[in-house]
Image 1 (cartoon, rainbow over the protein chains, first blue to last red):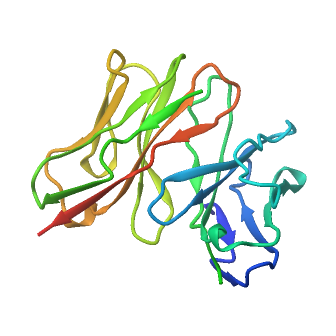
Image 2 (image 1 turned 90 degrees about the horizontal axis):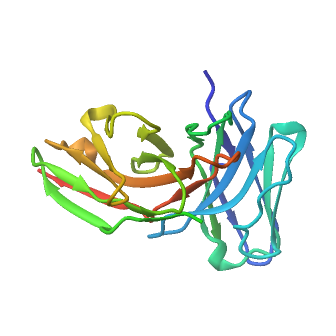
Length: 116
Length: 115
């Protein structure tokens, strides 16, 4: 079956431009996550959507970052006025969420963002 | 809140040697534990997970991990590694008592298997 897909796979932009990164989760998964993986760093949690609940935005590094999830499916991560330090691989994951937890997160291949 | 520590950022090892990648976590509540692997230029995939029951968990590619509650550890082991095991490995925890499936990841350990 189809896994988590992300687009574009690579994005090169100039400093100060806005970018949009897209994530298509696995069908039926109610939870969706965005992470950032910088060179030599681990996974940095950015934002988490679950069903109709208010998203957990506690990981967003600044107000230049925002995300939305339309119709409980596709999500878009937007970075405004990009800076060079935003260069990283942005990973999306999705999962079921059932009572008791413990559900595996399935990851997409990531979008490599380069800000010149 | 939970936190995960992977003590070794890089682990070099020769092919066919055993390896242990260390993971310690800090949490005030019971947790689920996971190991993910990221091969070069790929996304993360699940190696194994501990939910409950037997503390020794077996995963894919011959890996296993043991949950030690008293030491709050979940170390990953393989008795004999292959070149193809060269990858980055991430340990993660999630809170059993939460209604949210939020993961906390460690900083990763790069396993470099040499011929």
